[in-house]
Length: 579
Image (cartoon, rainbow, N blue to C red):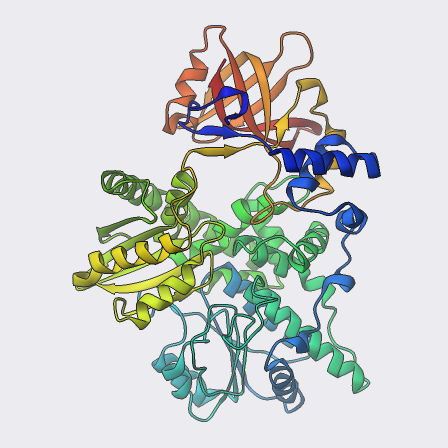
């Protein structure tokens, strides 16, 4: 049954409210704790048991951090890294070109530097070299280094790691492993086939952090002091959010603590990036995912592949500012490239049909640096796993994004094992692939079949999930601060979305090319400002602008707006429906 009777909103979605079980659970939490009802409703939706509420609202990293040695090969990896430190060996770090790879590399560079060692950073070019280690690069690094540490990559790089003759290799990764592992000192990866899967939700930076925790333990046993690892949690938090790891358990604690570290503004690279992104308030998970993350990724997408990692590891604020400005410029350029690919991909996907188990599009010369973002946009629009592929010559390189409950990485890997892909892999929510042009159609048909078996395509493409109703007078800074206790919010733990029912629009203004700013109220109490990004990409922007006094149900998420020293609650408007 639809919420408030909205079967089709202005964005074409059906509204769905909380079920009876969640409402009952929220009431039980309220009776036991007397916490604010909207907070109780959020805790109920997140599945927090009544007896766990206190611990959930105040998570302690020491209680949630797993024993690093519970991951296979961790002892070997930590021992080899410490041996390299002890012997003052030459160390190279081979990192992926995204935020997770960049933060993983910066963690190691920072940690080694504090122990007096300078390391070599190598990040492959997305277009010329592709994802992960390649034989030429690994052979070159091996000729000049004693140890190569592969971060956020390497688990399936059998040939390239074998080419690293003369150097030891340690892999710290989280991408899905195959049936066999490359021959090297250690492959530390909670997504190896022989792992339990209990820590499968960790991003690569969290795996690196756990290895550094183990190194710290070994140093203390030897009577030595290692670097302050808590001060490095800003990088782990950034990677966890940007890599869309679920914000539950230890991930939630890592992000929560990491945001506190970031607020201290001690890392020059993040300070410079925050300033160029005009981040004026306390950092939160939204800023990590949508302000900082895209700018760090921009270097790997359409610019210098190693720029993001170098910025994060930079100690000089002036050099950091120059790099941050360069990344900001690249991010603007990336948005322009993305817009053109997105329009073409959406048109193609719509023609093929948006209600299938898999939504996909492929186009000539589409930039490989933006196909992942466009796939993410298609996924958000359709609530289906999505693949976007750029074709060049006889091959296509693509990227995919999945929805909750559908393991895209495993399906892509199976396609590769069946010979329908040249190569492919990833994790549950994101994956990459290379496909021969003449295999494109059969490969996508088979992928759709595999994903359908996991339930892809069963959820309504147009469902907007809502937590309940609020009146404008209740939407206070105090309430927002109470709800934030259940955060940080993000993947696997979305922030609550509320409806303001039967509202009058008092003010409406177009902002930029496609955004809408409004002020609304119930005609009796206080008014609330709202911003709707991309409102004019569809019908919602113009309809609300031309309201002519009509009333609307308005749905979205509350956020704190800080401007000119004034703090107020703002609604990030996501949808609307006429009354």
